[in-house]
Amino acid sequence: MQLSPGRLGSDASPCHVLVVDDTDLVRHVTADMLTALDCKVDLAESGHEAIAKVAFQDYDLILMDCQMPLMDGLETTHRLLKLYPERNLQIVAMTAHSSPRDEKMSQEAGMVAHLTKPYNLHQLQTLIHRFRPTP
Image 1 (cartoon, one colour):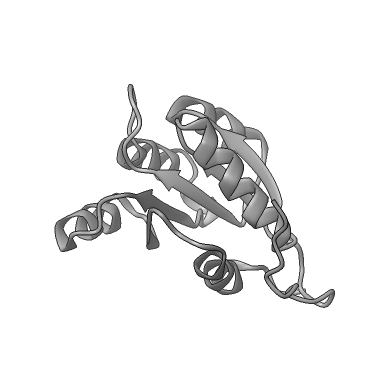
Image 2: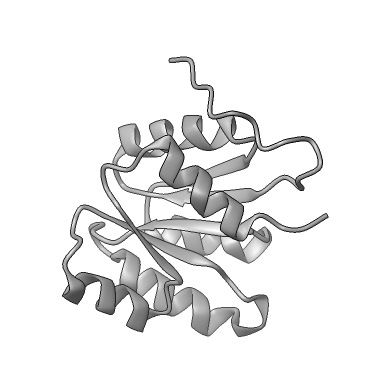
């Protein structure tokens, strides 16, 4: 699959993103889109794996699936923010549910934005522009 988003330009700092989703296809398609946007991407397939990765790595942005087995994205977000209050984690909800109630629940969990599946390259590009570190 060839993606051409119109590169963000060499003057932008790379954005390091953690994609957390229990579905392999979602993780890899999202990673491909983010890579096309010049992001460095790490993947986690569960909330527990995300917590382990965040323990050893700083991320500019974490894309968090809300509906995962064992520990959902809301609980994972709550735990991450409690464990690392000083790190100003930017966690975005990734969910197929887009009701006002769902958005409110993700906001109450501490997520900073809500990305409804299926999303596209332009939506990810807008999100990356918002959270990309300044040089």
